[in-house]
Length: 212
Image (tube, rainbow, N blue to C red; front, top):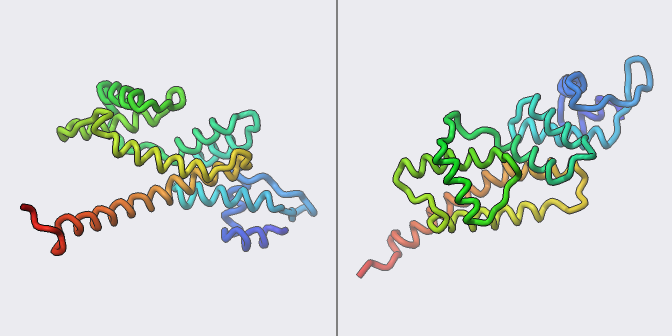
């Protein structure tokens, strides 16, 4: 297909596709003349992944390049590719650094939950920053107190990983992680708010049984 058809099928302007070509995010097409090239379904799938990383995950071009380089590195295990993608999509949650006590709490919590993360995973620091805030508010931050949230998170993660076939193409796996982390993360947040309202009405609404 020509670049105009590639633009039509991908929903991206020709100028944007040319920008991705210049930045090396999209491989060049097969030249058919001095000024024209032929593009394939592989280019369309690549644009689909780039669009998810840019428009859905809101990643900068440089970070998109990092994810795509991992996709193209056939020697990188799928587990490491998923880790690169998850870390890129998760990003940095806030500018404050985690305290050393928070990092130690996060490590202990993960150990108590028997969750093993990748070596030097940045998610430990992300978790530590949240634990710092909770601890500052006087909330409990031990495994027993946080177990309901941990169990819910684990159950959601199991469902999300079930969406990635073992033999999934590398680009497809990265796309699933990028879209799933953002879109289903927002879905989970909205369902949680709706559930809170439903439970509040059940417990405290007009139809709730009066406390004796």
